[in-house]
Image (cartoon, rainbow, N blue to C red):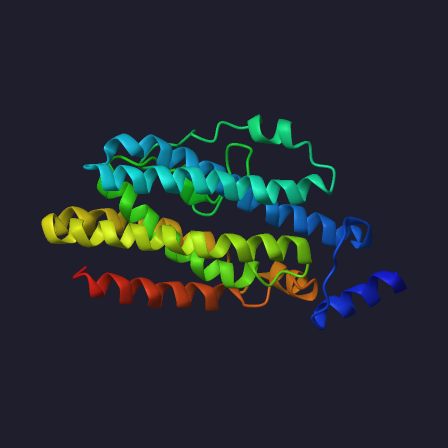
Length: 248
């Protein structure tokens, strides 16, 4: 107990861990939960955008969707390699869920994890066309950018390094989406607004419970640094700013 408390104090003061053998049991559980959520979300997002490639109205858009599909799968693989250091069977993990599975369009999952995997709930909803794919990419891409400010600072150094490599490409995904959404806004603003209305609340749920009791535990471990409500407010302000800039 004394050793564990000393490690928690070290982590709370900004210390980092560098290898699985240095990690206390509770920390290990929370770290694996964090990594699983990211990996599952990236695999589900990749599967969703793969299905959207054929919705693309032109070659430029098809290339952008293909790039996002590829890179999200690559990001999942990179984090899964860190999980392997903790004994995760990566070959089994990659195939244990149907990453393309989706619920009905009008179902309301809230923030509930469903289907047996750890993806964000927003990634259980189906994409119904190109405008829908672009809007989801923008809103979730901006959310990922905000959440990356946390992930790149996690106290497990090998994972933080992976996230720092991933972050610029995730940011580029959002920028590609904004480029596409600007063209859509000029041609079909009503459809864009309808899709935004559908996805915005569902993406917001991904920031988690406000005043979360788990946050304090994660903060002590150096796995979180900013409360959910602060991250949500940052995302909402960013969405408002970016959408206003293209007339939405």
